[in-house]
Length: 383
Image (cartoon, rainbow, N blue to C red; front, side, top):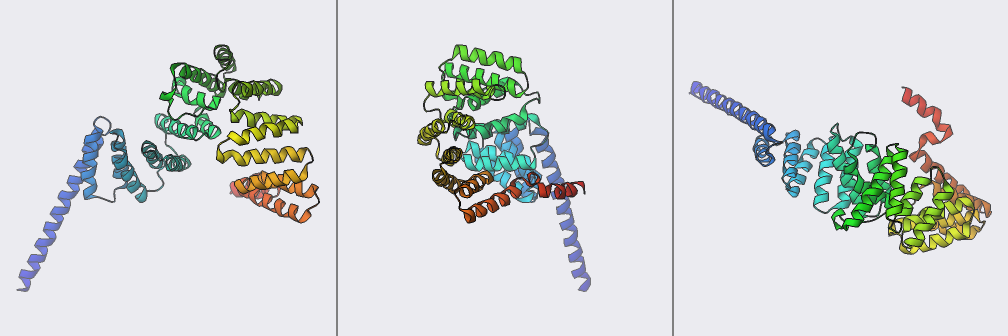
């Protein structure tokens, strides 16, 4: 009886081993077949990956590949679920986070899409330039939709001098340069698209250090679209590096042509403050405050505060800077300006508080910019 029980156990172990071996062979076969058709027949690959993952649900790479296959077949909700499963198993895959962001963009979740794309960029987008271009272009377009033109431009600049086809970048780069908010590039008229592409060509040439091509394109842009929205603004931005007086004139021209072009009002007022024309700057900023997107109102108040500080109107400066800090408390420079306003008005305790907050934020944001910490951080890096 004992021997019979032993034999039954041995037989069961043998059957389990055979089943495990068969399952292993089945998984290997499915994964190989899925990989072989991933690029050519993504729908078939997605099905094969699904079968393989039923056998090995802890296969992180499989979830990510299945997500990629589903994305190629426009099944974005299923793809996002697959990417999340893969990320839960392997969180350090930058391309997976970026792919998830692309899915969320298609599902009209722009804020979450940008958050995941940024996480992907932080972890690294890999060596595939075509994929990086696709990710950065989508992120830039999402940012343009929210009028975040500077952030959108920052998505594109890393692609400069990397052999990217300029035609791919022109439209998105043009919207950044002109400061034009659109939901979809297809919403533009044929004439508007031509103007945007020409502006993008000029800006992209400038970003790629081709000044002659950039100057020629800006000249053509001004000749063909002298009253186009954002045209003088784009040229003014280009001129800021070489001719501030000419840049100021271009921003003035833009405001005359397009009074509600708030990016021009902001840059124009900043240059006026630099020149000491504080009253004109405040007037332009008050105009901007009425039309600027809500997320940039703090910047208007900050600049009004700075203008009043330069004009020695300390109570007004303090009031505006406090509003700015309430809207954006993490900006170290705002606390510095407010500390100066308090100091000059004789409110030394408040000045010291703001100075301490400035120094705290400065250390967090730019430790190497604090002289006392430079040697410390240099030693840490050397180790």
